[in-house]
Length: 519
Image (cartoon, rainbow, N blue to C red; front, side):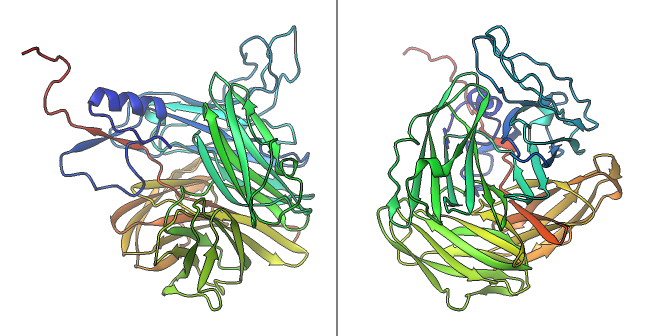
């Protein structure tokens, strides 16, 4: 991820307009600048991509777009989600879609196939409502396209889009949710698999007008998996490419780490993990490799939790395992440490580690600090009626984060403060079809995880968004869990809450250096 420091206000403002996120600050660096050294301004443009939701004919998918109210944001702007092109040809993409008026609507696939040698695009539109109010849309079936979205002006700061699918039967059945992501140049996915029971796809979506070239590397228990098929994958402009991981390796492996590295351009990436018996969900990218790792929001009724960890370093390391429970940090019996060999993926079964209480996993190192990525595979339910969710390592909530697509029931907000007590404000937005926003403040004690039954908007109609703001104290990590039971199967999906990077630091210019005077 590029983090270029610019010295002039004009340069920084331009960066904010182009990238759409606060690329000037390292995660968790809020408040690190000397007083008066920089101002924080709302970003002016944000790009998000959503993977194609499902290959199932009976899938039902909903989208929720939300922008939190941001002080100092522009007074106008626009935003929309559009379908990625289905076909490549010689001409530019053309739209067959009708704009959504922001009151919710059907997202359809249109115009597949070629016509007169020109590119014919499948395109859809979902326009956000005013900041503070969710906009919704839905689609169904196996032909629903990947979506590419851009928000500008008042819609850009903190723009969040949630994609949630319900699949009633078949491989990967259950509740599958994912936050649409900002495009980038590198992603790590510990927790993937090419086992016989799994069909895992890495979805690559290119939002730009030029092709992207991507390498996909796999790492198993014995190190790098040899494969030339994953090298130099071309993702056409404004299109999406699903890659079945089993086609990149000769032998099946239960636990893999996937590294997506973009040679040119940028893409959004997410892994869809589909299991014949355990259902399925989206595996979002882990936070960047770091010496300590936090995996927040393990559902308290999880019946089995599996840790998958990887270090890209050549050195081995031992991870100290702690569970941040409601009463403090504890060491899971029999799982005090996990040994990682450099360049290999390690998986450990932790069983019902939370034992019916809220919990987050905290991994640290003592003797040395090598970079680590990690994820949890969480199983909910009992044999024959089980469902899978994934929790990747999360970055800290430096200022603010949002989880969209909540209803009056079935949503849990989980917050952890691993090192120091923190205070947060949680705001439940207005509903997509009506209701009044409400806010509540919570104190998260050091070393604990707190599961919160989130506040609900007064007079709620439709769905709503939850925005979490760190007010004071130490770093906060969070996740939102959605649950739904269909035909006795307990569906579950978990989305972590990384900082929304809705503002960017702009250094003050103490003097005019636009004209250099000769001596």
